[in-house]
Length: 140
Image (cartoon, rainbow, N blue to C red; front, side):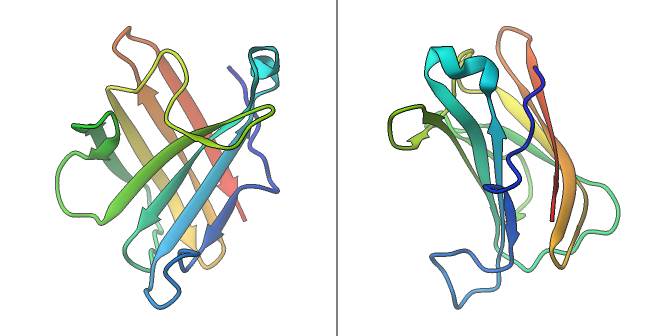
């Protein structure tokens, strides 16, 4: 799959929109899924929240595992990372969750760098059937 990132709907914010008083880093990533339009899907994406003002100057990886409610959670350590995946149906409101092949069994988020208004990295979803999705991003 080669889904381009949606530059207008992807962003790096230093304060989560709903939590104006807390120092946070919020990364919104949206991918245009033209190959899925006939299946009724306009885009997929993820919202990643860190409970700190994040600055990364060298590659840093975060391992995520499947939690108790079909969500991905940080595998170890207390990074303050929250992961919220979604997809946008063509003629409907945003839906939380994942497309087929379903909820990933695990994922790796690698942040190559995160500075004032720029973030680069990738995340890899790993599914129970052995397949993987690799999504790169460069948001500024």
